[in-house]
Picture 1 (spheres, rainbow, N blue to C red):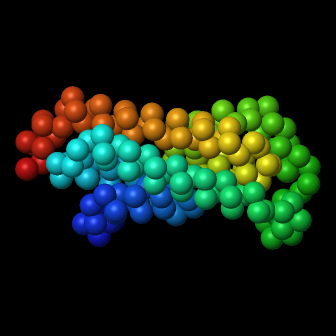
Picture 2 (picture 1 turned 90 degrees about the horizontal axis):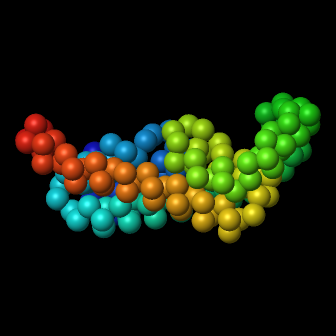
Amino acid sequence: MEWLEGLGLLGLFIGTFLAATVVPFSSDVLFIGILLTGVNPWTVMIVGTLGNWLGGLTSYAVGYIGKWEWIEKWFRIKPETLEKHKKKIDKWGPPLALLSWLPFVGDVFSIGLGFYKVNFWKCAAYMLIGKGVRFTFWVLLFLQYGESVKEFLF
């Protein structure tokens, strides 16, 4: 992950994008690392949010192109199980995309929303809000305690 940090904002964009797909790592450490380099925190928040959001939309697209027959055949999941999950997705709908930033399950939510063809625009909006709130939280925390962290680390 250090090589991504070395790329600065481009590395942050790539890292947050990949972290929102099925690549198993959290972009939070990378995000904080870039904040510690002295880049404007709000620029970091915007780049991180956009990368993570576009990665989440990519996961949605992967789910969208999926077919029930493939899931049944390749993953040996019964149609009843798919129906059960569809009912849960239908119950929560697009607001479920607010949680797409969560480690591990967030990617599953994004893929599931696409797979079950939940309204793209609503999912995209909720996903952007959720990911934006996450990175805004980190920026606010950094603005409050960043100097203490820098002194501790350096």
